Amino acid sequence: MPNQHTKDFASEAVSQLRADLALALRAAAFHGLAEGVCNHFSVELPDQSGRFLLNPRGLLWEEVQADDIVLIDVHGNILAGRHAVEPTAMYIHAAIHRIAKKACVLHTHMPYATALTLTPQRMLDTCLSQNAMRFHGRTAADAHYNGLALDSAEGERIAHAMQGADVVFLGNHGVVVCAQRMDYAYDDLYYLERACCVQVLAQSTGQHLAPASPAIAQKVMEQTLSERLQSELFFAALGRKL
Image (cartoon, rainbow, N blue to C red):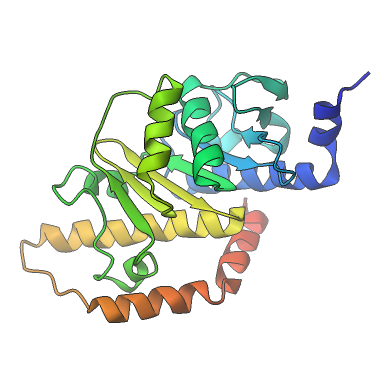
């Protein structure tokens, strides 16, 4: 007989979350944001039970489908699904869901964002491009690289370093992007990498950069977050394409 976890996993609401998570992973692969079979995306179940969906260990993001997604609890126990999960995924994502109270957690080593974690500033300048301004006041930097997250203490340290931010740049490591919905989270992930790319390209000219004022950056952030229809349409378009 199926247990409650299996029943919940097959429910209409959770099936849609699994489909959205799988789509976000395939989209990230399509946009060049994946790295081997590493990195992880997760989404918490809406019942606040502490359970969350996670991509499986060992699959390329481009091949992940809804049926490949795994349901686990905050202790890393697999509750439903046919695949194993990667240890660092469990420790990082469980802590962020539990401590930072984020529904969707996307962790990547995408190239341009990661490149900025290697600089003294450790992060994006949110007063430069228009795409960067959407993140003004929404970012944090964790400059303390502490090796692979192979225990709960390191996952908790990262979660606390976020200080409530939607985006955290992990020094010498990568980034984590969070939101309450998968379409919003993926939209932010995509535009974060675009913003970081433009900054790296501008810095490569060797010329002084010309940021806008913090007041303008704040205005653009508020304008972007006041109406997220573009995020919804973008994710829907990716669904049609992929």
